[in-house]
Image (cartoon, rainbow, N blue to C red; front, side, top):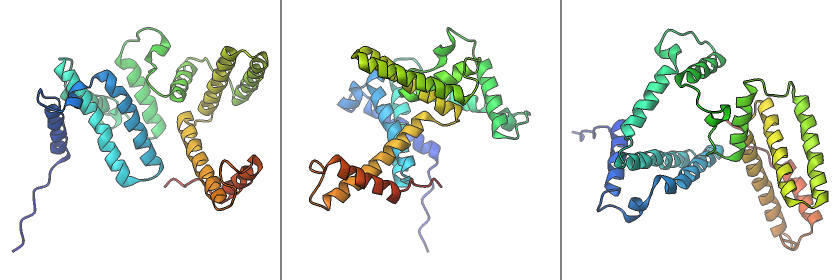
Length: 272
């Protein structure tokens, strides 16, 4: 007779175990490092874990993604534990909030609203979100500053575009980009470093608008470009290492030759 199989453990039970472990680590006789942490000190870990999840997604490393998602899930549990200790809220409050929000913002699933396309869903979502809270402060107060600069800029431009503060077409965005490049050239000629930084920021901001106009994500586009550059430069490095002209010895022309070979040899990975 075969041994009876062990009863399966539900995701909810596993989540509760994570919450219990975090409480134990924060106990008076718990981990010294965990007990020293605060909401402020945990901010950088939240950012790091988010980018590690993104990296696993982009590389299609699914075992790694499973692990990184676990690391990311630790962060809200950790922060909620700190908040509970201070009497602000518990992890149950956070779970109640997201469950209620998902039900509220999906009336086409949990109510009687009709939404046949993704665009319909997005339009309903935005309308419900706008009605959930009374507007407080200025329009851009709702745009979080706690995000990468490219993502923040794209959110800012999308927000003001909704109230009509936008270029009529993409052609005007290109015109503005050329204008800002010319102003940077003038700042460079003047030798004014503060002006150069200011104008460079203006160029980046216009490029973000260009991404928005094309319905592209500026942050993801730059991350993809970073990954592409890493791959191509790795090809250059390996190719030169096989010769007597490695990095540090090879000329710019020799590196450029290998770079052009990398461009034709390497292709951006397809996304399944």
